[in-house]
Structures are given as C-alpha cells and as structure tokens.
Length: 415
Image (tube, rainbow, N blue to C red; front, side, top):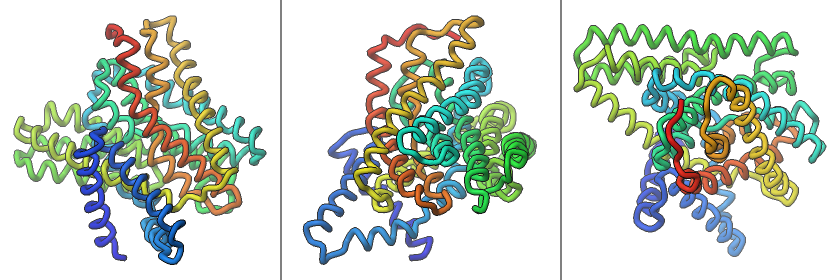
C-alpha cells in the first residue's frame, strides 16, 4: 500500500471509530477511539480463532507492520503534536512551576528508569542494561495522552501546568536517555553512542542542542511573523517551524522533541503576544487545536490496532502486569522525591502527589520506542510489557483521573 492509501485508511477509520464512540460510548474522544479500535482488533482475533481459514488477523498484521508505527510517530507526527501541546502552555505559568517541572523531567526520569530497570532485572532475569532500556522507554509521561486527558479533567491551573509542563519536557529528556542506554546496551545497533563517554556527549548534543535549535528557530519565525500581516502565511510558517525544525533536529542529531517544545512555547507565548494580530492568533490557535485533535485520533487508533504486532503469551502478559505495578511505584517516586526536595521552599497541596502519580499517563511514544529497539530475544517481551502498561495507563488511569481529582477535593491553588 502507498503512503497516501495508508493515510486515507487511518483517517477513515479514525472518523468511523470516533463516530461510534460519540454515539454509543461517549468517552473522551481519543480514549474512546482507542477502545473502539481495540475492541475491533479483538473481534478480528476472535473471528480468526473461530474461522482460521479466513486468516484475517494475519492479513491485518501485515498491514499493521507495514505502517511502521515507530517511524510514523517519532519522525512524523511527534513534532506536530508536541508543538501543538507547547503552543498552549504559557511561559509565565511554566516559570512559576519551573523547579518542579525541571526536577521531575530530569531527576524524576532517572529515578523512574532505575526503579523499573532494577525491578525488571530482578523479577525476570533480563540483563541489567536491557532492563534499564525498558525503564527509560516506559518512564516518560506521554504529552499527547496527558494533554488530551487534562482537557477533560478540569484541574486547577497550577496543577495542570505542572503535569503538562513535565510531560512536554520529560518526553524529550526520556527519549535522549533511551537513546543513550540503547547505545550502551546494543553497541552494534543503529542507535548513537559508544560507551559512557559517547553517552555523555550524546546527551549534551541531543538535549542542549535541541533546546538551542528550538529557541533559535522559534525566534527567527517570530521575527518573520512580526513583519507579516497575513494569517494564512503565518499559520504556514508555524507549520513549517514544527515540521521542518523537527526534521532538521533529527538530521543534526539533536532532540527533535525538545526542539518542538521550546519552539512551541516561544511562538505560543512571545509570538502570540507580540508577533501577530488578534485575527491571526484566532486562526493559528484553531488550526493547531484541529491538528492536535486529528493527529490524536489517528495516534490512538494506531495504538489500538498495534495489538496485531504484539506477541501475547503467558510470560509476556505476566511481565506486563508486573510492569504496571513497577511503573506506578516508579512514577510515585519520580513525583514524591522532587516534591519533598522542594517542600522546605514552597507549599504543596496534599493532592499533588496522588494526582500527578495517577495522571502521569504512558502512551504511543513508549510503544514507538519499544518497536524501534534492535532485534533481540528480549524485544518481544519488552514490546508486550510496554503495550500492556500503555493500555492500562490510557484506559484505566485516563478515565479515572478526573473523578480522582474531584474526590480529593480540588484544594486551593497554591504556587
């Protein structure tokens, strides 16, 4: 199938499944599409079991594997999704939560990666470095899933900024940590990094390079927008910044996710304040909301049908259940430690740790990273465990975070 045919099919099915969810399930849009896609996939698998001569699952599996989910997300959709998410986070709000976001996106990722890696290693006997790779890919909260749920949860502003800001940045940091660990654990693979010296160099190049590139490109586009009064052209410039900037970062071996977040924050704050008219702001905002919604729908559809690419057996499912517990414990530690470090300097409502722990959703990025791993005897197990954690996170945590926030009483907003 051609790329155009695949894209057409995805849009068609995302629309159909979205309509089914709207008419019958009435769940939040992205989660509803995921559940409908998952139910449809399971129905096909059951049909294949009852009528093996049809070989429906085998045929769909070929199509799903041809989709190259990992490349489609990490090299195509991710830059647009992160840019769209960052565009609606104001720098002033983020600055007020800067230390919380910074510690959770750095120290938190390190703590979570270590806890999951050690637990995976001890429980399943997987080599320690490979277990750490799994810890790195499952630790980042997925900004796509998180931001989608935040729209429904109606959290207070400071808590929403903490969760959104952390998810935007820990995604980029987690991706860099993943690349570093893969370079060490699979030195003959296609990923960068040779030993610990190469790992440090890679981390600095990816993380710092991505941030600098995002700031430079964001500032350049901002300067262009100040001199232009044409909303269609300015929207096009923002699209070029998100798409082209991400690809340039990948080409330069810098972090595309971090580039997209920094550029999106700059345009969403400084660009909207000083670089465009009210009419342009309205069109640019609506355009990126629409892009976000459409790509969210397609991404959650893809997660639902990726069940065909996952090898399910008793060992892998048990590993997945174990990984859910490990991921939750690791997430609790990744939230609690930075909060306790900062407690002497500022007040935190008592609901911050439970809501941020339960609201730290995993998503398509973790699945994409698992699919991108070099082939090894451990890859199928890691992929299945990742998929189980992601499904639990999006469906169970995603559907219960709003009731949890209401139950905890929505304490007064504190900085």
